[in-house]
Image (cartoon, rainbow, N blue to C red):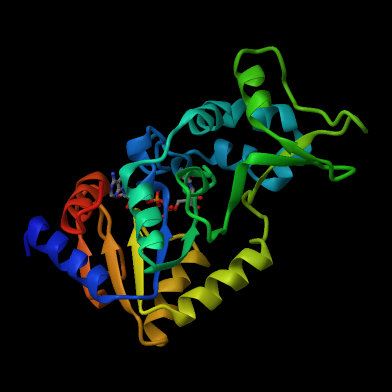
Length: 253
Ligand code: NAD
């Protein structure tokens, strides 16, 4: 199947579905300038970075954690939603998209305007004091850290380090986001995977849950996934190209 035929088939699947859940991953945000974690310089190939970005790494050395991740955090803080994020908003407005489940920590689904978003790995837009739990908006800290004026954001009330609200390696997923995602996926008629390699668990269980409930699976991803063989359609295309084709097909501005 050519990429164009696959795109048409995936759009047709969206047209025929009425209770769609999207499952997004890092690939939906690469066209916003946020790198995914793959490739020789990606985090998965760097054990030191993995250690620094773990929960125990943060507790041991919060300054090292911020230093290791600040370039990514600043890039994310400045990024704007892509056409694919906007497509999911339009599908919600058309009454088709019942929920967006995301593995991303970039907050771009909220920024685009999706209203039912389950962030399985949290968000780095906000943070909490590790001692008293005070909530904080994080973006001002990231620019201060990147410019070298700050090493670790500290709580104004108790002076303890502030941690972004993201799920670090070794952390458990937020139970409410996971439970809501499973409930949405169990009731959907189409699970639309956008930009995920589907190798990170437990998020990668969601396509199996959807299929067990009788839903169809549609995948738009540049690389292959282990679910391609059981999907109704698996398109190897850039999400920007796919989203533009869907905007055109549905007559959206
Ligand atoms: P992944 O890095 O494992 O896979 C991304 C997939 O997207 C790849 O298969 C790649 O081929 C595909 N892709 C890249 N650009 C694309 C494009 N323009 N169009 C279509 N497909 C494209 O990502 P994952 O499955 O989300 O798992 C990685 C973990 O890393 C997640 O837990 C996530 O939280 C985290 N992460 C998040 C961000 C973010 O918030 N934007 C960025 C990097 C990593």
